[in-house]
Amino acid sequence: MWRSPVITCVGRRSPRAPMKFSATSSRGTRLICKETGMQFVLTEEQQLVSDTVRKLLEKEWDPRRDQALSSAHAVDGPVWRQLAELGLLGVALPESHGGSGLGAVALGVLCAEFGRQQWRAPFLASAVLAGTALEQAPQGEVRDHWLRQLAEGHGVLTLAALEADAGYDYRAIALTARATSSGWRLDGTKHVVMDAACADAFLVTCRIDEAPALVLLEKDHAGLEAALFTAFDGTSLATLTLTDVALPESAVIARGPAAHNALDAALAHAALAAASETLGACEGAFERTLDYLRLREQFGTRLATFQALRHRASDLHADLEMLRSLVWGAADGLMRDPRHGDAFAALALAVPVGDRVCREAIQLHGGIGMTQELGIGRYLLRVNALSRLFGDATHNGWRYLESLEDEHHD
Image (cartoon, rainbow, N blue to C red; front, side, top):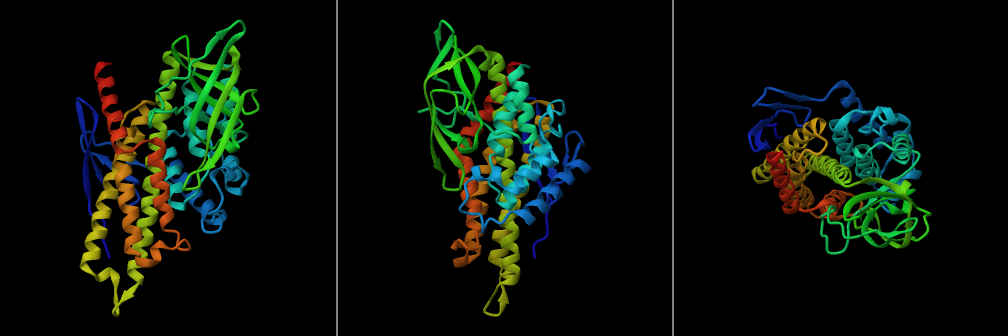
């Protein structure tokens, strides 16, 4: 058996204040910042979120039974409905608009449980990406209506931002609205739009008068067409084509610096959500692997007693503790600043750690690890899909460095 060592990792909050975190819990519920003495301990509410979601998914969700379903099917399932009734779909959205207002730490806790239980849903696309962008946008009737719809689980909204040749960069906006006598019109294409199959509306990035803008178009808006496909992990995706789409002034949610800030906040929260889900997936895969090694025997000896396997498992445990420290440190940063760059550092580490831990979990199971029935490989599919949706380690590392430059200039 492996005991949990104390693992220390170093991260940077700003160019001026290096912060050291000490992880002392295998569940990541107690992190101590050695520089300030601050303890990152889950509050009673946050722990309740974790326990409630875990019990709900264990009861209502079976990844082996539902593996053929895409993420878009989740909105018709019991888990989505009960999460809405519990107010957890709006866990990080403001209370003034029907959300729970529990902030980024609770969001991370929720996404970690999703990763652990292999639940696929439009939560990341709708509540995190689109929801955060709306929350950070200026107040308006359309914005306020959709925030409440998302928080109460009565609608699904998704962000349509990626364009051809933009890579992972959601901020590279080439789609430009052309002026007309009654407003603007849009012609262009958005790629890799998450969960468009179940979306009631799209939050589209474009340029109006050369400035970035966020516009909201409902799914039946004239000129919108979605070509649907499914990613290898079951995520529902689409290519969204806009053909002579009329854009009234009421559809403009934010423009200029307001749109830029809203999009940056949405991407930071999405990075935290993806890193948290990766952490949860790694924890699930690692725990199942340890259970297998403790029970499986070879030549009359339990695999857990083999020194080589113990060393491999210890290395994975160290990787997980480092990732856990960065994830909860990043969540704390987003509680204070909705555009805090530590979330990108967390995702930059989550990409290689997620890939390594999940691959090792398959290998340590031996041949049975490759079977669809066991399902250990689904963890690897999900973490790799997240890295393709929100960027690899290099991309997120550069985003983190950019955030440090922005903080330095401020």
